[in-house]
Length: 110
Length: 114
Image (cartoon, rainbow over all chains, first blue to last red; front, side):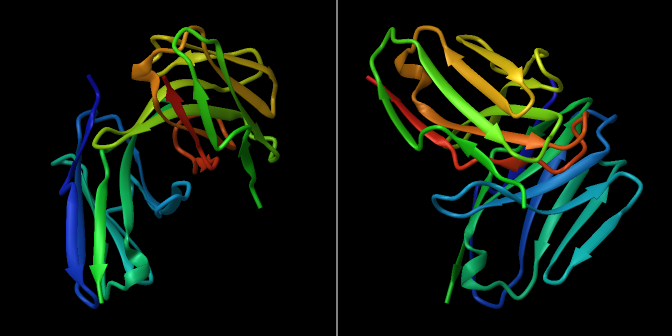
């Protein structure tokens, strides 16, 4: 069936370093790819999204890249800060719903 | 500012009980969703609704039902709670039909079934 694989499941980086989280999806018809951040004890919130007619999108320290041919997309966080510590979920649209990845726990150490 | 609220933050129920989880959104959104969140499994879609009285099965609908009598309210029902339904339940809404818009999540209900 349709699925989204996300790697790694945990990621530890030093403050100031970059972090990259990768996702692959199975349905070639998917055309919307959001990323959600969930801080401890809080609700998931959208941080960035990309549509299939775009290869890359940036918003300050975060960027997302999409390779439709290979069916994978990635989240890039530069100059990480302790407040970036959270669980990050990727997702891909399948007709009228989203399929989420299993999440990546990012820890940024000062 | 979109607000999605859920009736309880924490709930403890006994096996076999009927459980109602309520979700309300105040932004006149068309779509509403129920997910469960389990460690290592991410967010899994239980049911969703794109209109009043309409419902669609998600990826894990077994053991659950839903009700959407009013546009702003979407209820998740566990007909006979079981221990494997112990989980965090998240409600979400989005403005347009189709899975291609921002979803706004509620704070979650942590359900423990004993």
